[in-house]
Length: 298
Image 1 (spheres, rainbow, N blue to C red):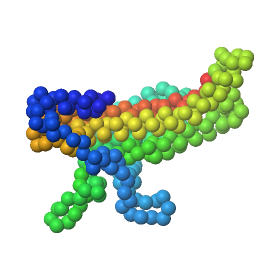
Image 2: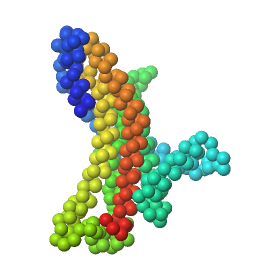
Image 3: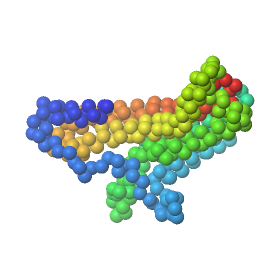
Image 4: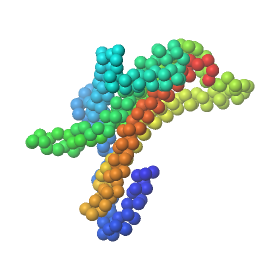
């Protein structure tokens, strides 16, 4: 919505400030913003195992997640320093608010390592997505005679396949827990709320069964869409809109003065709130689904 308003308002603003620049507006059809998320293979391997920038970002997020756990495990002190204090605060939040707040004590103790790993992995994946890294192989720059990839912003979680795989793991995990606790029949019988009686149980059961499968879409798309939208807003406000509209020099300067502060604001908002919030929502819903799968009542 913000991007659409900016595009619609641009000709009016330019006309008020510079009529000649406004008349110079012509959509640049060669500019394709979606190419920023295209996954060209870096290393060709048999089948679907190609190495590309999404794999590169996933490896970084995995290394940071594992490294964080190892660092914390090996550096606990009786008198905590600032880093340990921050880590302990995050630990308590994940243990008590996310896991403990949505599962019983036994379940929370069992699944807390998974919940914490999921939270940190998604958080690191989101955060490094806002760091400019040399991953744009389509547009290279010359550095002392060597062509290297240019800097780009990309997040693995902005690729639907990554949130979808995480969602499938969660979906399968809470079904297994439900089957263990109640049996297959008891699990699906428990989909109907205890207060529903008579013939109403049939349509309610199918509605709840559909909603159970819809979680695959809602959980994955929520993470994917929020991260993708944030990157597109930063891309367009940071200069993509100027390129798309193919403005003259004066128009580019005028539009840049308007959109650049918005790009900075979007960047700070995404890295300061959205990256953490989406990791929190995903891990919290995971805890809710796991807790609900073994609960006696719907």
